[in-house]
Every structure is written in structure tokens, then in C-alpha cells.
Amino acid sequence: MSDVMLSDAKRQLGALVERAHVAHEPVFLSRRGRRVVAIVDAADFERMRELAEDAEDAAAAVAARREMAETSELPVPWDEVKAELGLA
Image 1: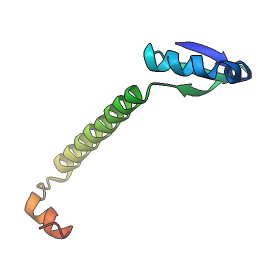
Image 2: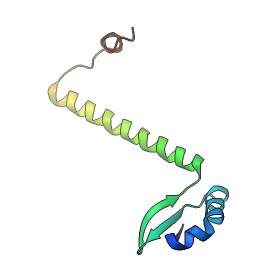
Image 3: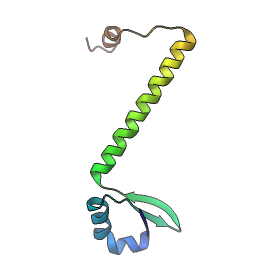
């Protein structure tokens, strides 16, 4: 990973994009010593986004199971859920 000042990045944008794309190395652009933006390969970004969504789904499932255990409620059958959403 590398940090590049935003003012320098303007002159090197093509090379920075190439580094992120070919080497799969994120490049952080900084302003006044603070990171403000990252340049990452599009495929790498999609994988990160999918992993984040999977983690959110897993956390929601854990929370739902915890709530069911605390309230002693049973899960709603999938057929009922589909019917309520107009999918059946």
C-alpha cells in the first residue's frame, strides 16, 4: 500500500491506476496528511463489497437467532414470507 499526496496524484494518475489495477495494490490519496480516497482495482473492490455484504448478512442472522432465543419465537415459514411479499 502506498500513500500519495493528492496534488502529486494529479500528475501521476495513469501510473497510480495502473499500479492498483495490475499489481492489485491499493493507492491512498492524501490531503494534508490524511487519507481521503483509495484507488483500487474494480474486481478487488467488488470482492470487498461482496465480503462486506456477506458479513452484514451473517451478523443479521446471528441477531435474528439471538432474538428468537430471547423471545422463544419460532421462525416464520418461508412460504408465509413469500406470500406476505407477494412472491408466491
